[in-house]
Length: 307
Image (cartoon, rainbow, N blue to C red; front, side, top):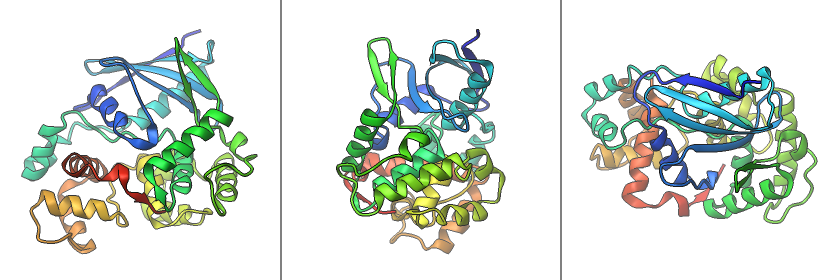
């Protein structure tokens, strides 16, 4: 049984840049050996079976090897391939991304500073939504520790040789969650509701990407525990919508102000006007700006997260 798949990067892409991003992305709690492959464990969308995959890059080719389960069927391998492509933004043709820099010298500088970096998403919109609820009104590192404990206690472990990765629990497991240390107020209830929504297909990545972003955001805000900020997080960082700017993320406006040497953070109208030059990769440019802001200030990991 073939347990491998191959993806082709269209346009600049660096798996190493993706790994470095994850290593600094607190919710992922990701660590890897220097120069090693990317090893991921997650519940596979729609099938909701936990899988482990090892990803390597050779030029334009990105190869995935399914490590767990040991004998995956073709349907599972195909689903994992689709999910990995979305996680790494390899489902998007990035051959036109360099043209953004040709139109905008600020973005050209960021592209030079972060060569081959594309958005690296949560493993699924379901996991992004769960993170949004866990992280409400507490510090990001505290939320990451709670999320890691949930994975360790009710998620499935995946072995990559001697390294064990605990996947976030599949929705059928999270739907049975009771009280949990660190989850205050209605958070356990909201997580159970999000798990059921995932099982019902309401957090399906392909569906969220297929409908207009405004409609997707409206539907996401109807889910328990998700507000404006959280809905954008799920759509952009979970479903991988490539061409949208966050309208409820103050750090993004701060990043724009610093990068473009503005006296104050731009208004929503100013951001909309400026981002016209970034189409059809507005989410990608947002990532570059936020990554640059964090490198400049080191502030994001220590700030409270409000959904």
